[in-house]
Length: 121
Image (cartoon, rainbow, N blue to C red):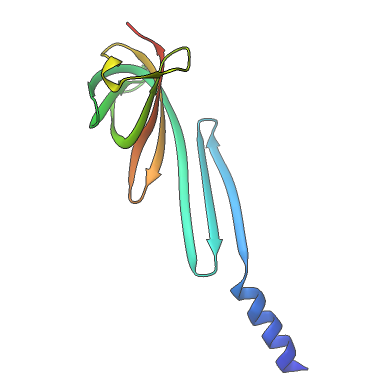
């Protein structure tokens, strides 16, 4: 009887999967999934502001209007979307444009994977 109970308890610990989503503010989501001995964390963040510097394929710097400008690394597969939601070439984005960035975790670094242009100047 004890052996059967132990083997059931052992099997349950080996196949347990848990998932939780937390939110520290409306623009940040974090999800942690634990499967056996492997744990994966991914998060997405949206940041808005005015472009102060932009190097297509490399980096973008935003002035959020409340603190000093913040620099973000551009991901390899970044999408630039215009105010109408249509794809734009990366070179269409210029300084002083109002944008919203979608930032994700890629491995051990945080990168921009989508730039939503709210207003081109």
